[in-house]
Image 1: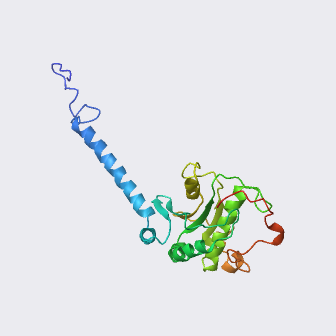
Image 2: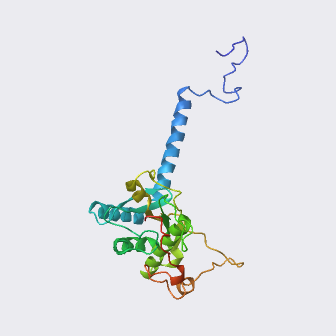
Image 3: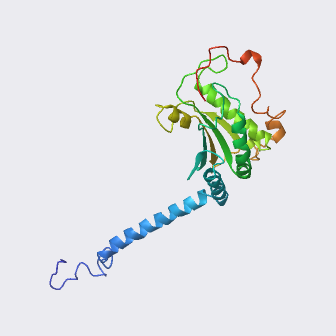
Length: 250
């Protein structure tokens, strides 16, 4: 309670109080609520900006293909972009055991997916990720699952290039067996881990700039001289696998 002294101005009087009129107690809670609402709407705005209409349309198209049984996998969207995962099953094998060439079944899957990805590649970068199970491999062509997963992702990129994708928008990366989605304790789970992921990024790769501030551009012909070799082409004879070298199941 304010101290009252005879012939003195009360300490909560606006003429002498340091903060003017004291605020009612409910105003503190009200101010907190307004701050939280502002943060909430800022987050909503950021998410709506990240998940563009093009990605939302592609998400719907791919979900329809999965529901209709045209492909096996899943698609997820977050603030970083969209991840399209193609998974093997008992009827569909993407690669032969211990090899990086695409099977006819994988090429058929890509023929369905390529039109959707091509529209996205006009605005977004697409990173093709190769993943394997944990069964070790050591051959003359692939020293480990690192090399195998990278070669498989690269062959998928080559197939996209053959479908007139802009090479500037594509990248290939291999993660080997180190990013499983389930435990590699059964053949079914190993099939799930043997997968190809298409990561459609919201944030494009930063453009390099010359000293004058102008962007350095590379033409499609310079980026892919001679065009990519068709996916599924057999490796050179000296790079093939010898008898008994194959240890990994695709």
